[in-house]
Amino acid sequence: MTTLIKNGTVVSATGRHEADVLIDGEKIAAILQPGTSAADSAESGAEKVIDATGKYIVPGGIDCHTHMELPFGGTFASDTFEIGTRAAAWGGTTTIIDFAVQKHEENVRECLDSWFAKAEGECAIDYAFHMILGGVDDAALKEMDALVDEGITSFKLFMAYPGVFYSDDGQILKVMQKASENGAMICMHAENGIAIDVIAEQAAARGQTDPVYHGITRPPRLEGEATNRAIQLALVAGAPVYFVHLSASEALERVAEARNEGHNVYAETCPQYLYLNLEDHLGAPGFAGAGYVCSPPLRTKEHTHHKDLWRGLRTNDLAIVSTDHCPFCMKEQKELGLEDFRAIPNGIGGVEHRMDLIYQGVVMGELSLERWVETCSTTPARMFGLYPQKGVIAAGSDADIVLYDPNAKTHISVDTHHMSMDYSAYEGFDIDGHVDTVISRGKVLIEDGAYHGAKGDGRYLRRGLSSYLI
Ligand code: DUC
Ligand code: ZN
Ligand code: ZN
Image 1 (tube, rainbow, N blue to C red):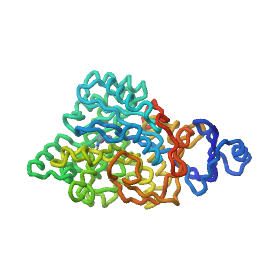
Image 2 (image 1 turned 120 degrees about the horizontal axis):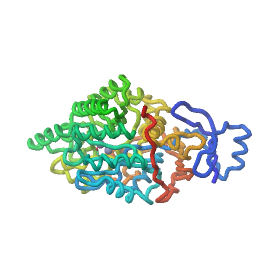
Image 3 (image 1 turned 120 degrees about the vertical axis):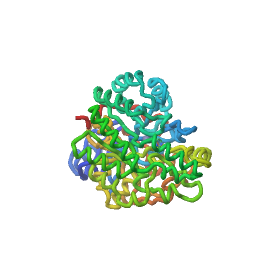
Image 4 (image 1 turned 180 degrees about the horizontal axis):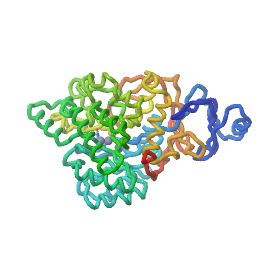
């Protein structure tokens, strides 16, 4: 099947230009200058022609932080791989990197196999895995080398959640030492979970059990402290470190300092930390704030007022926007914590809205169009060993392409989203742009407001090492 996309503006991480894009099968065959004989003959030979007049042609989004079906807090994240990846496609994301989970005393290989089993034949878009190591022991450390060889080239560690996913400093150092040998990237959840648990227990003992206390008991300073500690451990081990879901200015400062000193320190943030806050959302009346319980927590208005995270995205101290997509329904899931915020499953779903929400940053003048593409597609591909197969519109790359219409609107609501959630964290948001057409490895998934894909369209991606390793 050959498809020609014509009359649009191709946007890359480095610029924009009018060009026609020829797709042959699953790959981009050529980028053609409009009006040339090559473009004319491509059009006459193409089996399908898509008119992209007035639209941006961008590489498909890559969400490098999702948790489909994550077992957490006595329940499971509500999106299956089937539903979550279809929702991602609706929102212009054509690749996810999900987190396979190993908990304390579980066997890494068996855990990874169970993740493969959950995803295989289910996904709408291509998918890869990071591995969460929640029980670092000699067997887990040994298994890391084999996983890197098999394309699982990044490992997430938690400085939070004692007794669940938590690693102590010694365990972290050992994993980092292993990564410095085998080239893996270490993804870090940086919050001081030991201190947080003390503060949360004290709050609960005082009867402070509403959802807002989830945020109040996880101060930004404890994200900053953990970020600094992880950087120092990474420097001792000689390993790169990538901070997931960075939310606090104190953490961003530590990342910026380390980067200014020339170290291999990277970070992502997520839309919830750019758009939502502790008072209005986590502190919403009644139990509504439970829908905004995630970790790290939403920060206060005073904290978000300075827009440090948007600045970090411009300066590249924040290299990527992912979602930390971890949806739970209010009913029967978030409700587990009706009596005590500590029992509310942590997570917000947003895989469907990332491209739109960050495009709104372009509209607001916070990011350039090119930086939107870079933070949402190109850098995730480079950071996690998928480039240039993914993350770029170039001859030979996978034909993962989004036509984005800057003149159409998107209204976000639980009534129209495709995620398995009974509320939307972004209810009522109006975006000045719209995901118009989505193509995944040459197949049109979204066109004319309809879904044309099928379960199992998505394939597993073996990843290489990060392009950011020096
Ligand atoms: N944070 C969340 O909010 N959910 C899943 C795991 C995490 O670290
Ligand atoms: Zn995390
Ligand atoms: Zn996460």
